[in-house]
Image 1 (cartoon, rainbow, N blue to C red):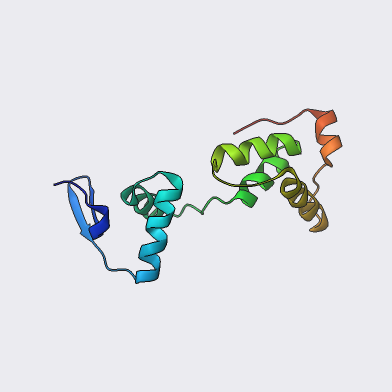
Image 2: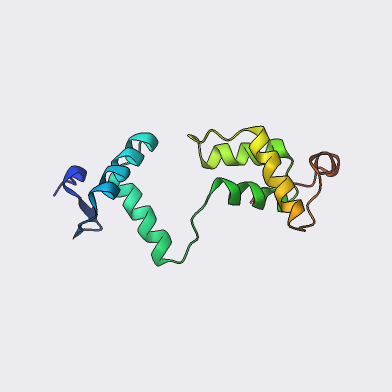
Length: 124
């Protein structure tokens, strides 16, 4: 059976799952599909896998902060964010804010200049 996302039907490993969700979430789901060029099935599957396997949702901030903790410069952190979230409108100023915020929270994060000088970043 083919998957008809507009009817809320998803086929995963030959198993069919029918769910009812609030109309507001239904519209948001299709807007996300249009925005990301993913199918509704792919989006729902990703969300379920993350939830059921205990994976935390990846966010722009988490990607940027994780990179900085590993020694990334602002430019390197921005490149990782754009790679993970191609449609995000994250700017260099946003990345600088994340670095400043980490430092304000007391984390031992180098400044961007110190990260550039150390050149110690290792991508995951």
